[in-house]
Amino acid sequence: MNKRREFLKATALTTVGLVAGCKKDKHDDALGIQRLKDSPVVISTWKHGIAANVSAWKVLEIGGRALDAVEQGVRTSESDPECTSVGYGGLPDRDGKVTLDACIMDEKGNAGSVAFLENIKNPISVARLVMEKTPHVMLVGEGAKRFALENGFIEENLLTEKAKAEWEKWIATGVYKPWDYKSNHDTIGMLALDKDGNLSGACTTSGLKWKMHGRVGDSPIIGAGMFCDNEVGAAAATGVGEAVMKTLGSFLIVEMMRLGKSPQKACEIAVERIAKKIKNYKEIQVGFIALNKKGEIGAFALQEGFEYALYKNNRNELLKSKFLTK
Image (cartoon, rainbow, N blue to C red):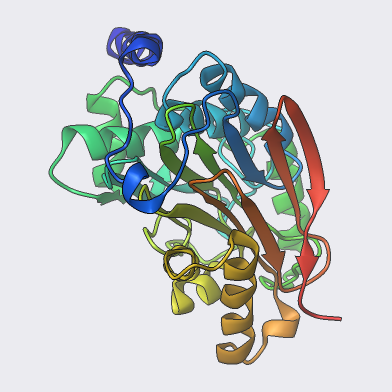
């Protein structure tokens, strides 16, 4: 417990300390990109992104690092028992177990990830420690939990009474529909651009409800659920992870932006790729968000219904994404 308090305290101090110590990214001049002195940007997926954006903005508005912003932002969703697709309160797998996946990536290209993690409320912070304290990118299952406990996290039951009741109701029917995109979306993905012009991203989820025990989706996979390249931009995905993993959508979006595409066009290309490669694309939902070094954003989805939260120019708004299928 004391170690965990010390970690959070150190994170806060680091955020404040960076206000005065930021340096211009070495690639800014090469790409002709101007830093956003007064206008940081944060974008995240779904309605719960509104509250998450507020937490992230508190870091960004004082000149804090984008990495700290995305971590603190998605922790808000992870800790909210009313958010049934992320963290504490997340709907369980078909065995009644809540298993969590998350990844994080900073402006230097460092990345950390955890998958199939049980009984730890904030997997995004565990992922950050994997990035900062180990030579690895991903830890999974019991190994990830042991690492979390060794670093001051507390083991606790994440299955709320509300989630348990819904699971028990489903068990009585025995009908498994993992691709019911109208009632079964997941994930919060978040991207941030700080006042120093640096990008970071995070993605965290409890995954598809009633999934097979042991199933891991795209959210903790670097390049699938989220990808960040500080020279160009960042992207994050939500929806059916199997489709995103098969097409590495977030990496594709960043590469399209590297080739000169706008964030919006890059998201559209990634969705079109899924429609071309995945046979049952009309039965699933996948949505992408993107953010480039200029602070421009993009969002696009397979189906109607995807929403994203954008905090920019001191305004936090929930917006409807354009979509492919008519």
